[in-house]
Length: 246
Ligand code: NAP
View 1 (cartoon, rainbow, N blue to C red):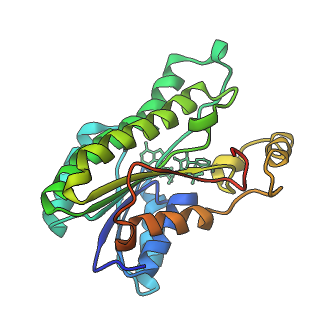
View 2: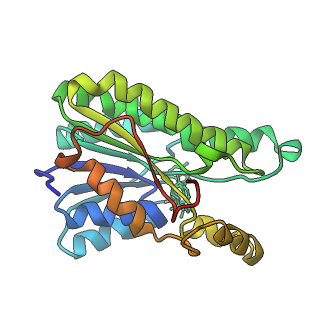
């Protein structure tokens, strides 16, 4: 994979899938801006990348806060001159059956997973278009393709991310900017560790490969989609789920 001195911004880089994406990009020579909500989360990730000889900076931002995203993006674009790669990975779940789902849980999931993509893609996507180069990778979910009982908010957010990605892929295509989604299945992170053993067993039973995926499984394809070589791929959804949603 080729990354000619590229600069990437990865949201949710403090843990799990985002951390693996940040580390994989950094190992390939990319300068990585690690965004997460909590400074105690993205800080050590950026420090570890730097200690290993890579280039990284931690920037704590609440991705659901449009004004905070715009301010951070402006400062980072002024500092680095450009951001070539945007990975919208930050996400949360607030599961519950629809009858019991509060509007606050609906809003939190939509704002953190979906509206954050709007904020970052608007702030960074247009400068990418002006530079005639960019790679946007949005981390959706198989739930955005096939749904899941108890996750109406999350399914709507992830399905929305997929549709949003296709729309901006069409808008940005002529300007050398690609936009794609990765749709993970059931991956070993803090997000799935909170599920009971029984729920985890039921989920794994639906996976033809009979195991959970690793953050690296998502990081590898994300890095490829962010590379020079993926320049003719846009508006696509890549399911990485051990065969679960086929
Ligand atoms: P995770 O381990 O829970 O990590 C989530 C990351 O997102 C954390 O770094 C967190 O920041 C950050 N984040 C959450 N809310 C934020 C906010 N408002 N502002 C800034 N950062 C915020 O989750 P994960 O499992 O790695 O999931 C990463 C992405 O993959 C999510 O979009 C998730 O929906 C998607 N996904 C995961 C799975 C799975 O099985 N794990 C499956 C399909 C899709 P802090 O560290 O500061 O809290």
